[in-house]
Length: 469
Image (tube, one colour):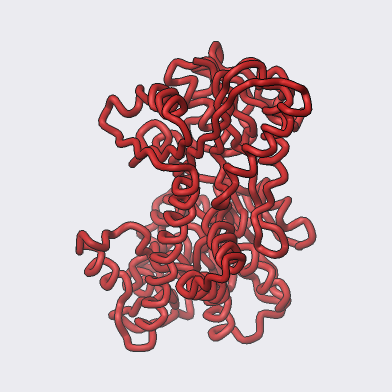
């Protein structure tokens, strides 16, 4: 069985590499010459743990090209994995999907299956069917084909695991023939006990939006609880643990913070709301989810502003730019809005992210942002620190070393990665999201006490000394 994947973004490139890992011959198609040239040289244009190794491992079965005609003629199954961004009216832009469908119909040379892997609104399968059939009719052909909806559920940062070991595989079909082919395609995964759910096409399309919207709802729900916890003096971390142990609820996506971002949740919630309006249906819960999330992105700035009303001339360190750890993706990342708000108040922003620095430079092309080579460099002489992405290296920071490097003593933890009492004991003023501290926020007039300084390791002292120089 031969497979073509059109689109080499997160979904397309990971899917293509994983199909090759299953033993299939795969051709990945993209219209971007630069990207395809990179891939043919073994360079991966996105950051995804393990992807570069997987591509290299399967190089004999995995090919890259810009020739869509060659891709369609090569394959038994053509996956459309192109982008479906929302437009200014929050409707899904299906331009790329329609282009792939048109090319599929134009170059069809025998029975093949067209699979929508991209996240597409309900009814897109029928739109693609009409486009493909029109192309066949224009050419005077009689080729047969099937449409399938096979939405992805991968998480950036864990995309390979989610593709090869999914919770479930959703397949929307319109014929028994297509069902048999796709079921056979996924046999290397399902034979290990992973469930495959066969539905009609519209139901499969809806499952994807329903899943993402529900997860977004859990995030906004716990953020609402966090904001109320601050009002009454409760700790949202313990609240989340208490309700997460209920197996009807579960602990995942119950982490309070500064809101969700990325390429999926914001877009999919907005598109489903808009799709509802087209059907005269009012998604009241999803509208609230979006409202809470937009509000949550402002919260950390407001906390900063409450403690430091005048930011003019201040230096603010930012740890984390990507919307989540283990990715360089900054689409709808809370950091974008937060940093722009801080800079608008006249502060200097020094930022560090382990992976997404180059991506950030594109997002902040019009912003005078200082990029640092390490977390410690970013906090040198800073008046405040904002933690916006929960990278592991931020969790394990030496607080005494941090205190020695900073000028101020404010830490605003937008991801609740620290124990508040430990941070306060180290001499910082600490603000998390929806949490209360047992001790009192207090600062010390000295950067660290003599006793604390003596406990610093020799390497830590040298690090700080180098920064001071």
